[in-house]
Structures are given as structure tokens and as C-alpha cells.
Length: 510
Image (cartoon, rainbow, N blue to C red; front, side, top):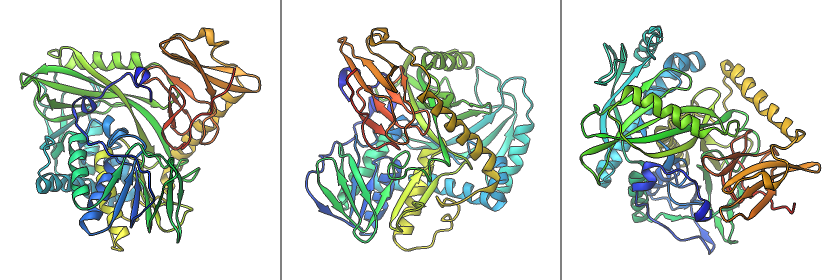
């Protein structure tokens, strides 16, 4: 991405982290396992494998943690976003218990790694509180409390969440939750992986991924990684065309960071129950001990199907100030993309319709830090030939019959986006595009994506997503082209930086 037109928003993690920078891969290399993606799932897998003596190469086309790990709010929780009532409906009581156990184990594993490696990432255990909006029935809390108890979680109903400035009414208290600084943690994982002999290459785009007896990954420079197994741990798989992408949907979520006086908000995780819901936590500001940063997220929508980020940030700010009037300036704002599986839990394991030595980790469902850690634990066992009790639960080839209505709904939505192939453009000519903005224009039988940079120069690209041919949409918040079908994202100049597409939008002459 070009610096003058890079993403306009900055997460609090990106602003404060010092992640290590690694070289591009330029020479052929041989390894046991090649991992694509240097986020939480990829680096946890790499770290755990190196501890077992496996040689590992990690490739990422950006920086370490530069994808969705750098845009999380880093709640480490077993309080499931889609609720245990829903998990019981979809996966049965035994499935819900295993979901609760796996996310609890993920938090424990992160704590274990932090302690054993001495990672300074602000890890701390704290409570989480779930409450309903003002005036709404609390029956959802009663139902969820019963489901949580059946799932083996330590949860209790309390009179209110400990927010001094806002009476939440009855709430559920989830004990032994946690939080940390995700990029500081990832930095520690990367250094520990390198110490154990693992190699991590950034700014290295994988162009071809091929499993089988001669498994290999080719990169943009022409270098080849030969390996015994491949793990694709990108936000959504870049090696899969259809199988997984029909079973999960991309959603954009928004986050703001505001300053509050130190100790004016009880340190805890907070969540409410609307759809979309809100989620809140505190982050210590090392540079200013007199204040904390209140991190608030929500306002989700399908990726590429809305371009009103300013309104959604304003909604978040209004919601926050009503509950935390001591908040001062909004210093950070960013958005991230969440992959929502139709049955609520991640896809971790062997890639469907592929060779047995190609594995994937995707479908974070808003809980990427614990799902990513589960991926590291589960994939390590699978690659080491060990049995894991979570294998079938997270199997990417699973078919959850009770999720068929959700499956149909999401895929009907995707099918509807193809109508944009025949509709008029949203602009008539490049002159309609302001500096620093973009728009889609009809160009004969096709459509082109028009971007005017800050200097006034116009850049024209094919508006056809390189994944499955949807028409991309301009995102004025992040200055990106977003695919409304499966969530591929490109920078303003058409360079792909988020799958499932794995190649750039093609330049065209107007």
C-alpha cells in the first residue's frame, strides 16, 4: 500500500506495538510445515510445532499481525458471542460443553505461554459481564445462564455490571476471562519461534499453494517452499474457491478508543445483547498512566454492503458517552473483518476437497484470539499424528443440519450481489470522484473501479473481484475496495491484502 493513501484508521495496537520486521523470502527453502499467515492462528501453530522439534516456515504478505490480529479488540473469553443457548441448538449439549472447554483451554494456553516465555503483553485475568439494553426483558440472561451451567462454565447472575456511571440492570458475570495486548503477545511468539529455529518471512505473497506428495508454496519472488504439510491460517482461506466460503460470511465491525481517567472504569470485559451487540474493555496507556483507553466495538454489517463508516463510528461514540460520560477524546478508530460461520464456530483442520496434508484455520466468529489459539493446539496435534477431542467439532468438512436456514440465508444474500454486474454504475465519469475517494462506473459491458488519489491522479481498475467475480464496492473509511460476496479486500490501487482473492485487481484504461 502507498503511504499517502494507506488505511485512514489506526488501531490502538498498531499505534503502540513494536512487532519485529522480517525479510522477504527470495530463495528456495525446505521445511516440515509451511504456514501462510502470521496472525494469532499461524504464529501459535508455528510456535507449538517448533517446541516439538518440527521445522517451520511462516509466510505473510504483510507484516506480523498486520491483518485482523492487529484489528481485534482482544477479548479472551469463553462467553460465546452467539450464546450457549444457540450453540446447544446447533451442536447439542455435548458440543456446547466442548466449545466451552476449548475456549477456556485457549485462555489457559495463552496464560501458560505468557508466563513460560516471559512475554510483556499486559495479560490479566478479569471478569466479563453480559447485560441487556435498557428496558428489555432479561429472559435471555436467564436462558443463557442455564445453558452456561450445562456447558460447565462458572457464571452467576448479579444485580448489575460494575459500571458506576450506568445502571445496566441484571447481568451475568463470567469469571476467569482475560485480556492482553495482541501484537505485543504476537511479538513474543515470533521471537520464541525464531529461537526454536522457525523462520518467519513477511512481505512475501504466496501465489500458488499445492498439497500432495510434492507439497509446495510458490511466492511472488519466484522462490519455492517445499514441505510435508501446509497450513493456511489467513483470515479466510486463499487456497479455497468455494467449499468454505459458502459456509461463512464476512462482516465488518467498528471500534473506537477513547480516553478515560485512570480507575474511573472498573477493569472488566463488558458485552450487551443486541444484534449487532457492543463490546467494551480497557487498555492501559503506558505513555500516560493518568488515563486508560476505553475500547468500544460494534455496529457490524456485511462487508462491502454499506459505506457509512462515519455514521457507525458516531453511533458508537454516542452509545459510549451515554454510559461512560467521563470519556474524553476519541483517539483511535478502526474497523475489522469478522468471518461468521453459519454454525457459529471456527473451521480448523484438513481443507475440504484437498489433499490430506493441507490444513486451514478460519471462521473466527468474533473470537479470533481464542479460536486462533485453539487452531494452534488442534493443528499441532493433527500434524503430530495425535488424537484431539476437538477434531470433529471444528472439522472444516462438517455439515451442521440445524444451521441450514443460516446457510441458505447467507448464500441467497451472496447470489443477490451478482445483480451489480448488470446495474448502472454509481458514478458517470471519473470527474464525479473526489480526491482520496473511489466509485464504480459502468464501462461498456463491464464495470471499472475509479480511484482519485490525493494529488488528483485517477487510477482505473477492473471492478471484478478476482475470487468469484462479484463487483467490488468502495470503502471510504478504510480507503479500500471490498467484495460484498465473500469479503476479499484490495487497497485503493487494487493490491489484494485480504482473501479469499489471492491476486490484484487488473488495471484498465478508461
